[in-house]
Amino acid sequence: MTNNIDSFRAAELAVLGEIWSSPTLWPTMRTLCDDCNGRFVASDDERRAAAFIRDTLAQYGLSDAHTEEFAVNGWKRGAASLSVNGHALTCIGLPGTPPATLQAPVVHLGDGEPADFTRVGEQAKGRIALVRGKGSHRLEKYARAHAAGCVAFLFSSTEYGCLPPTGSLSFGGSPATLPGVGIAYETFLRLERMMEGQEVVAGLDVQSEVFPATGLNVIADIPGSSPELGTLMACAHYDGHDIAQGAIDNASGTAAVMEAARALMKVRDQLKLNVRVALWSGEEVGMIGSAAYANAHRADLEQVKLVFNCDIVGNPGVFFIGLSGYDTERAAEFMRGLAGKEHDVNVVSGTTIPYSDHFSFNMKGVAALMAATGSPKHPNMGPHTYGDTLDKVDLRALRSSTAYTARVLLHLAHDPAPLPARHATVEEVQESLRKAGYEELLKAQGRWEF
Ligand SMILES: [Zn+2]
Image (tube, rainbow, N blue to C red; front, side):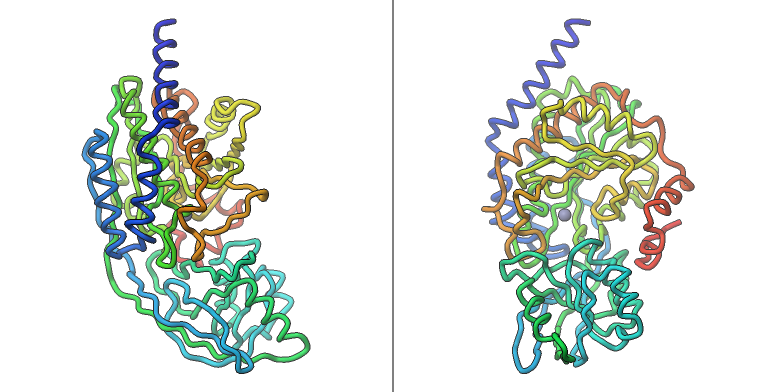
């Protein structure tokens, strides 16, 4: 027994040493960002990244490294312009926006929360919605603007830096119908000043192209010695947006998962459960890759005990883990214990985060978590803007995120005791989504699959 414990501890230290002195973590980030750009789904950059990830995992010794194709709406950005009172203001099309040329009065909808729409009432109809990206998710504000009869959607960042945000307008593969553009926070503030005490009419022109296409997921395995005990899934989306390198969101998560896999391969005799490694595409246009996988591999999902999804893990700050699914508190408690009292890891169970790829598995009843780093002390300077570049990634934070991810996977693949006893039933999944207040939204987005 003592011997076993010692050899496990030695394996754990070996994993940490591999990651801390890694010769591959930063080069992987450079390849993903500098050679493959934003890796927008169905682009040449995405194809190049998929081949790199597949070949690298095979080189690390993982089994059956391969790509899996899924259907997705491709999207090509066109020109976009916004003119107000004879002034040309910078804006960019939001992925999936239909092309449009229109002129209409602007209505200020604050943060686009339900109370803002109630305050404005019928006034929103026929107007261009001006909304700031604070509080609820962009897609929730967008759905409200659509329901209120607005004719276009101006979506503002909340941070200075003259960085108009991008971000998909569609979910579940159905094309968006309300035109939408992103504007910088400074543009939002200027519009706000222009609107003081007077009606402002804006001219909006946005060009874009939506076309049928395919995306590529990358899948590989680390076989365990007792596969009947189940599978852990370690995953991240590697696709990003067309306007930047998608370094924080989410080359960071991709590199963390690839690196954790490399380190785990060095101690694979300690792994009883299988570890399936998955790098998704199409997350940024509605979690299309992970949803396609979850649908195509329903039988395999029976074996999956936990999905560990890294999305944005290269920022300094607290490592946040949000777990959802049936019976996840023991796993949460275990992860807190592993982090130790002094460690900056915040593990929460019973959360519902309907964005990012873990949710594709939550919907099927599988316990899944989202891991992300950040803190108000270190403002997020990038995701979904031109600012999401490699130089913003904090290598120390990325190493630390990767190390913790690999430790959790190693422990749980070695001893599955803290893992949930079973999956959630369809009824339990629906109940938890209702409780979290997401039923209406998921239905509006065509994501309520029950
Ligand atoms: Zn992301």
